[in-house]
Image (tube, rainbow, N blue to C red; front, side, top):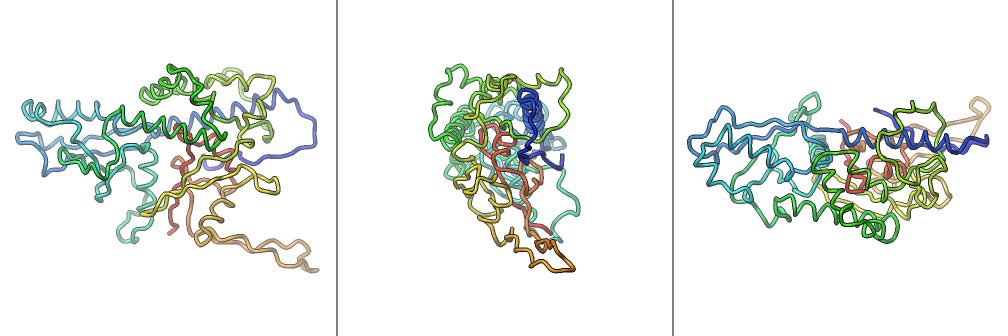
Length: 366
């Protein structure tokens, strides 16, 4: 999964519209499924200074393969059950208060409850890219090591209570903000029935792809019909998720297309730096697709230098190419080093998080 089919091709050939749309919808569903099924390894260890007396010290570490789209508060019942049953004695387990538990990385970085687990993992990965080579392993980190504290949470820095309900409220707020950035209003989200809105969170909570996308397909843009042609999927693959009404054989509605949104909801994460957010139109002023390279070059020109012009043609070189540019960083989206030719509109439709945002973590090349 190292490359994406993200470039639009305007072919003069007359093509079957409904078949083209079915192929496009299949590829969209495929990337959404791959994103949804992504997991990250977590190693959770109780702070040894906070272990209650009579705890089983040989088992104070818990390992879990967590869904990227999930959130730490949703993992707490499973984590609590493990430690209560195998580590803490019965008396200590009754005295501990769940609302006082909090996490930080092994390096001492406080974790944000309202960030998706995948974003926490990616942000930690890029922070390692800034460390001296002597302090980093030659291979990529296999797991994110977390320290679980059992008391004295820094509530002034956590921002949110460590509860699923507080996380749900933050999640729905992110969805509405993304909806407004895309369409200029929140009618698509607020127009959903309460049961449907709750169903979005239930899909995250239960990690149910079909339940989530049954509703999310009503508010998420389609990738449009201007895609490159490729062999169609087998008939059984067309049901990878419940397709929105706009994805029937008649073709997607243009107004629902990813290239017709006002802006793509994008956030840019730098190691130990502020989170950057800006309006990202799907198309440039000349009508060409807004690519990831153009976006990063305009925001981080020192890390992603602009492409210099090609030298003038000569007899020996009638078709000169621009000199190569060495990027000093790389973009990480959903745990994948994304190709810089990826189009922002496509990323917004296929690789956005469950909250509707395209989270781009920028790591430094070594």
